[in-house]
Amino acid sequence: MGLTDKIYARLPARGQDIAASAFGLYRHWLRAGPGYAELLRGYRDRDAWPLDRFAAYQAEQLKTLLGHAADHIPYYRRTWSEQEKAAARAGRLAELPLLAKDPIRRDPQDFARDDTRPLLRYRFLTSGSTGTPVQTLWTAREARDARALREARSANWAGASFNEGRATFSGRIVVPDANSEGPFHRYNRVENQIYFSAFHLNRANADQYVAALWRHKTQWLTGYAVSYYLLARHILDRKLSVPALKAVITTSEKLTPDMRAVMERAYRCRVFEEYGTVENAVFASECAHQRLHLSPDAGVLEILRTDGSACDPGEAGEVVATGFVRRYQPFIRYRVGDVAAWDPDPCACGRQMPVLREVLGRIEDVVVGPDGRQLVRFHGIFVGQDHVVEGQVIQEALDRIRVKVVPAAGFDQADADDIGRRVRQRLGDVSVIVEPVESIPRSANGKFKAVVSQLKANER
Image (tube, rainbow, N blue to C red; front, side, top):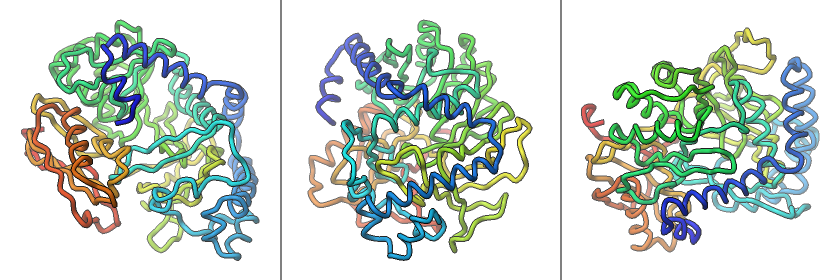
């Protein structure tokens, strides 16, 4: 836990609201400051481009991006062969090697341009869906580019805007007390944003979540798909009424048809799916026809077979992404860790952006607390754990969690105790067993589940 987190945890709820608003002020400047309006205009203007114009745009962007990578990014300059560097300078993406996550985890700075030093740099961690996070480095302009993309292609397509009041479910510990009796949110007054706690959600607490929506006149919802689905189930079960909402935009986990149906009944509005990564390597969003469009001006997406060849439309394969949003620390032919398939059918909305038929493998097992709270994205306990190479959370019983860790040099009892504290902060009084292991078994595709539930169906 960092110093700011420790200070935040000691504040009363009102003080945490003020801290959330101060953080919101900073984030608003970072994401919507100078240059944002121009970036937003660009995405809106390109919305109606034909496919050939997108292809020409991608070719131009690739030639610049890959050339800079070959010449000015230490990792690529060192590991690419002279033949691959020549291909990069010519913009021939398919001739370059695939990029795994491990080299980035080992040395994020090795992927940053050495010919420029931004005045301000920002570090963000992925949630670590394979057990350990990836550290990403951003400039302010890149943060604004990412927000402009989400505003134009996600929020606006759903009839909403980041300028309107919203509620968010994420992995942030907004209510540090695991045994809190509420409220289970903190309020960012600057952006009229509710930060919901994903770690206190259960049937008994659902009315407090709904009351926050009414109190702050929330107009739309965004964040973890499973958290909003679980809240929707409690709303329907308890016959709670929510304010009029424009849309729900889900992130982070796959949105299934059943989840969508339950949420649309509970929230009485359309539900839209967004697919992206913290690394901003890929971005896709749903239009009004519920088709998931890739934004070609945000990067190049490849769907590949195990032999590296491109999959046919409708054929599931590995997602490999090259993003255009982050140029300071670009990830080229990055193995995201997901499986997806192209949809060959055009969309009735008329946009010429490619359509993804489905994205597989992003629903995680839910972890259940002794009091019935249901949590997702639980692998967030490993964020900031410098002495953990990989980790896996296994729920063996309602009151017993086993955490397997592949330790790095320096891992000791203090690290194990911190993992236990993080688990109890989310679940309350449970037994936590931290088990160092040499490795975590992989499935046939080389991945392992970061969260595993061994509970019986009637316990979930």
